[in-house]
View 1 (spheres, rainbow, N blue to C red):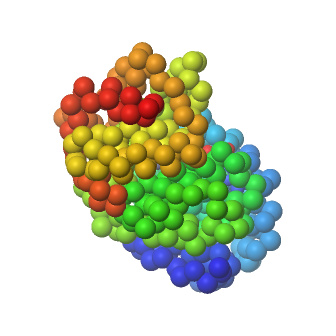
View 2 (cartoon, rainbow, N blue to C red):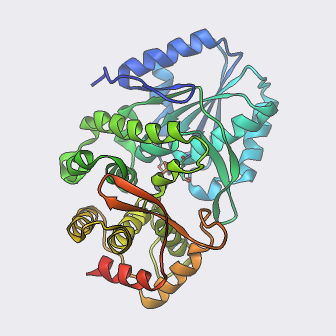
Length: 358
Ligand SMILES: NC(=O)c1ccc[n+]([C@@H]2O[C@H](COP(=O)([O-])OP(=O)(O)OC[C@H]3O[C@@H](n4cnc5c(N)ncnc54)[C@H](O)[C@@H]3O)[C@@H](O)[C@H]2O)c1
Ligand SMILES: [Zn+2]
């Protein structure tokens, strides 16, 4: 398990498991950084940092910067605090930032590093499953603006990403499931055999997952390499996300709907968009039914009233993929075969919700 090959990305590598630690230490030795700043949140500080400090080899000074855990802290105010700490502690252009945490830490830390003194290097060490298979790779960094997600940011690649399943032991179960949802998406957009393999959630344990994580990173990385700045093809990673984001925002704003984690919301989004794929792209109904069965076996079935559905559709217009006033969807012609920029007639949304519920 410790011999998983490094995955070469744009100008850096994603390294895995035990051999990955050696690469990381080797990299730090050769890079001659002046000092190391490790960004953690209030959960990864106690849960992941001690483990990391045990294996980290460096003679350089280390500073720890902690931010509060949670999406609600993924804001410019939090960045201000981190920039100030960097400055007060003498960070210079040869300092490196090591982001040790979930997607909030890797997104925010990458943004802070990319803008501090016009950009210092950063390394991602994802500790949530979602950050391992998604957020830490691909170079999107940034923060939210009010309730609008990821409105401020830059695309900047890390110097290295180290993925280790050692951190997953303390990750809450529902957070784990949320990351799994993105892995299922990787199967749906790129690899039918992988989708089949993931369909039985009960077979996976934290200890057996690293090769699977490796496979998912490989899929995301291939897509990102073809289209680093999301001009076209990279949008396939948004399958389930157009409606999923709207569902996520809706749940966040409405007292009658329980808040959904990102992966939970896009699980709903993928079932809804599977239906749209049947109507508009020729995905066989049997495939959409199979997709629904898998997601309903892993995630709770949510209830969306008629009013809720209307509000979700209103929220669609806030989606960042909405250009020229039209909402574009990434749908599926078949499992493993995505189709970009499909426009959806509004009467289909109701049917999609009915399909989700059936
Ligand atoms: N840049 C990208 O391409 C990209 C892709 C997908 C998602 N994202 C972003 O990632 C964020 C979601 O990532 P996330 O789900 O990792 O959220 P998160 O960073 O908030 O982590 C989820 C929770 O798990 C905790 N946690 C993380 N690792 C832990 C561990 N090993 N043990 C115990 N607790 C741990 C965190 O403190 C947090 O409370 C969103 O802000 C999203 O916009 C970015
Ligand atoms: Zn996502």
